[in-house]
Image 1 (cartoon, rainbow, N blue to C red):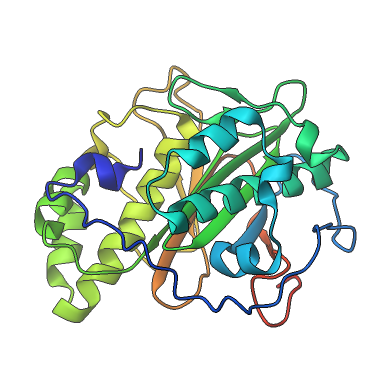
Image 2 (cartoon, helix red, strand yellow; image 1 turned 90 degrees about the horizontal axis):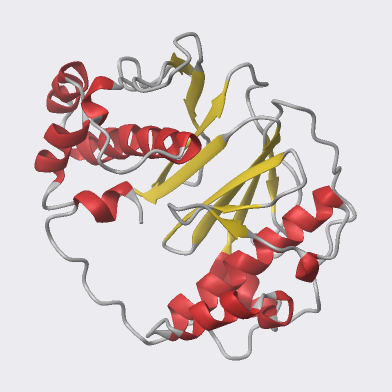
Length: 277
């Protein structure tokens, strides 16, 4: 569950079951990432961007590499678009992890933490995933905990209430000074930073986020924070915004020290021209 769904006071509208993509879209075979460098040092961040809708159309048959529990979860979605996005997201995750671990994607066995976060035992590879409106981010590193979040920037009827619940006094003041057409952007810039940090730490959603300040300078590339309940007072976290397509806000959080900015790649099939940024 994301922070947004946990705090939302208005239930989300039901998704349409219709699929507007053309049935005649090109379909390609299984994906491999052999052309991409699989090196990853401790503290280095590799970020993969993916358009789940485009990938699902071009590369069908995701269920072949999913585990039985993943296939069962996909089957529980009511709408086909949600099933397709979930299956594509899990398959992309397996392909990326298999690439860095040099293992068959279908053979990866996830363990799930109490908060539902998937982890892989027997490796120092850490990862986190996030998706919004068909766009997904996959963040990887070694030897550090990491979190990532992406949200489509949009108007929320409850935005003012949410800002009071999660922003510090200084952040609320900054949010209030923004012009009406900039408030949604500012809100989601702060939201994604805080959710990325919560996901990296593995904290519950009951945490008081008003004591964690991430928006004193929205243009600051990286901010260093201490987690209020961390038993190690000198333990530091780096939180920063990520470059993303217009209309989205995204952020990553990682244990310090780390290498910033992340190395960013586009998953094959996501865009007209695939490759690394």
